Image (cartoon, rainbow, N blue to C red; front, side):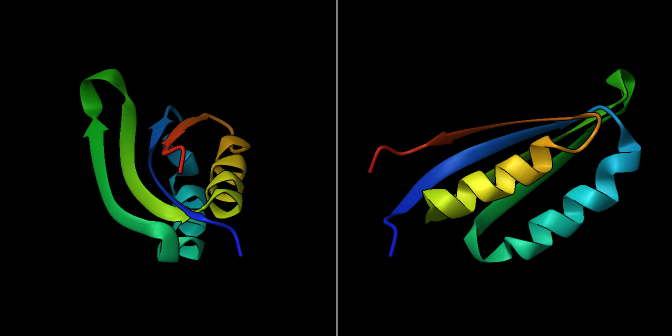
Length: 82
């Protein structure tokens, strides 16, 4: 079993049409999401999602990798070293 890590994931959504895909992926990884904050930044035409995660590197990487493949979405993760 992989060691659990705590981290943050930042998601910037430039294409609002991608929101259902993002939400579906986040729902699949709900077991590693500790907290979620979503902010629609209407004046810039984007949305920002901040996540606190606690899970294996495989799970965190799997989630961010799938989200990163969605058109109009940028994602970055910062994870504890241990």
